[in-house]
Length: 143
Ligand SMILES: [Zn+2]
Image 1 (spheres, rainbow, N blue to C red):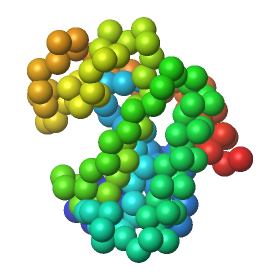
Image 2: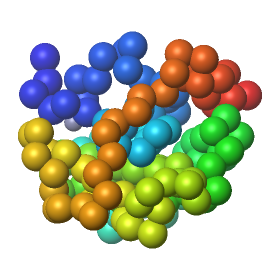
Image 3: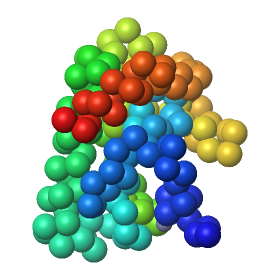
Image 4: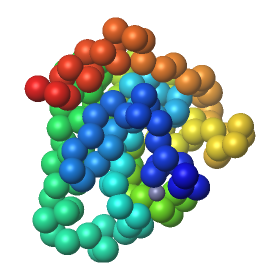
């Protein structure tokens, strides 16, 4: 068994998968937060071929489009990381004008090991997908 949390994602947690990426629900505070995870251990886009980068970005766009269709947020925020878990991974955050922290970056409401990364003026608690939303997202992604 791999010690890497992204290599050992339980199948039940994978919402969608391509040759390039796996998609899972994120654990950030913003409703509908998902992650698009590059399958191989790579930590920087400069390590990818142009073809791999294009496929990874195409997966991001596919997932963003499905999240937009299912949750209808006012906008989406994106972030790309690869330095904490050794897989490049996009975060997609649906954002609503009614969010109390709409003008803040989503990272301010992240919790790491139970503590917030940085103090946010407005604190949100995680609000996972409902079963219906999760089913709709999977169906939309499989189209
Ligand atoms: Zn891994």
